[in-house]
Length: 373
Image (cartoon, rainbow, N blue to C red; front, side, top):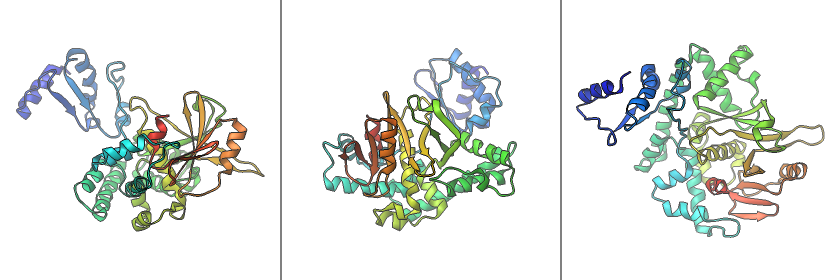
């Protein structure tokens, strides 16, 4: 556990000097070595001048096996797949990103730029934000080659389910994982996940997938005020996959239709657009804290209403309604605004920046602009 000894051994093994204030030491796949995780606090205490980063998957499971984990000494950063803006930058479109961020309903984008962003947006739904997949596309591969990389990633993800087997059988987790994909866009029904499995095992499999970061929950909130998490109902949750590229590949969606059509309602009922918005919203938040996603639903004999996402901006509760095309009624939105006495709502669609007071319209590709407030 002595940092100097560890650095000396690494320097000899790799024939590379480790120099404080100059060298970056990177412990990758750190979840495979519990002593390496424990050593982090000693690096902080005894060699604070050395830059050190560690990374790994399923870290939460590894941390559960440690009695303590450097509280106050080790900082955590939450990392997601690449955002749409990062995807554009990787393609050399920084100016287009800047132009998008400077736009609003008073200064919408010129039509050619709006259409160009729509085309990039549709490609991003297919490719997703997994770094290896984006790199493959940026380096000249076509979408068929990109799909092959996604297939390889999915094989690796399913193989990783074996790491959970001390808690739940990997076959059971795979069944629940597939059910989450099939139920995407609606409230998750546990009894649909695995017919011959007891409910407690299904719930544990769901929590494991959430803990791993593969699955992200969207929890029901009454949305009567802030904080939104004060009035949640954890029995009502939607569950989404962490990446649209992986999602469309699992479902076998027709990539040609996604590129050709401007109406995603006909493609898996627009669930992929709703999923995209939630993921993007998380990506543009602070990486130093874990954020939650919320939705609102009212069930009644005479009037059902649902808002896809509820967000908080300063002291305001803002409803977000996603339309997978450039049309559609907004009865649920108006019911929410009236019931909660909210000042305005946000509609995300394939339309350009615009407004239908009290509704502000943002294009689906402009979540980063929305998060700017």
